[in-house]
Image (cartoon, rainbow, N blue to C red):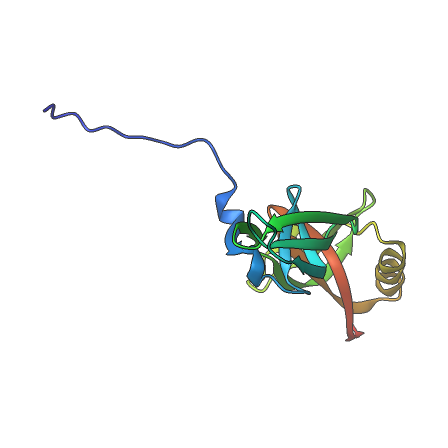
Length: 159
């Protein structure tokens, strides 16, 4: 045996912490699931009966929580699916920059400057109009699998 200490550093990220496994048969409507590598909200679940050789299958229809695209997947109900860790955080809007980024105030009093304005037209208009009127706005930021996007807006009154 040698006296040398070996240090192993893993540089690879398998993305494992971004999701957790859950049996396909236990995922319900309005839950979350990863379909084709994208975090989705489940809008429809149907289960087929077991065939001659095997497994009952679950047919999932999901809407991507960031792009609003419809995705589908069929998985045997006994198999595991990846479920994304989805977090929703509220931040106070401080500023909107010329290049389409927003400045947000976190709970701890720090600023968060790495988020773009949403692509959804009506939400974008509400944020810009409310900010131009000098209202105190709180935005809800949805985050999953390393992506973040503003998904909702609350008006907490004038400044």
